[in-house]
Amino acid sequence: MSRSAESWGPYPLILAGAVVAVAVTMLVNLRWGGFALGGVVMVGAALRFAGYGGQLAVRSKRTDVITLAGFGFVLVLTSLLLGNNELKAFIMSLFAR
Image 1 (tube, rainbow, N blue to C red):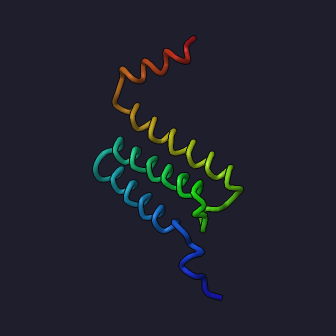
Image 2: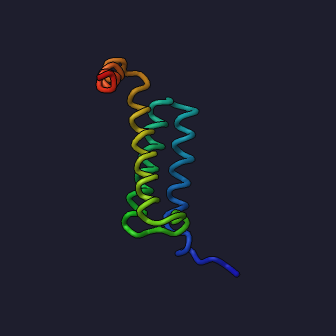
Image 3: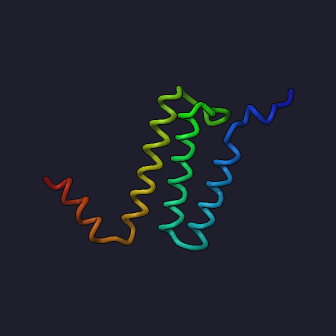
């Protein structure tokens, strides 16, 4: 039983983007790699929302989109906070109240 290319959907694209983002993290800069990985995960959320499931479709569409978008947002936010003490202090002041 062979799988057609359509059943994979955007999974190879997201996987290749994640591999490139991890390579950027290891070889170039932790901040840029984390930002790229978060962006790739959010692209996966957008593709899943648009209906291109393929191998990205693990749970219901709503759960997949919320999980991927939340994880991607946290990765991007964390990568932005790595070297920015002013932004880190501002965000911590929001939670201190």
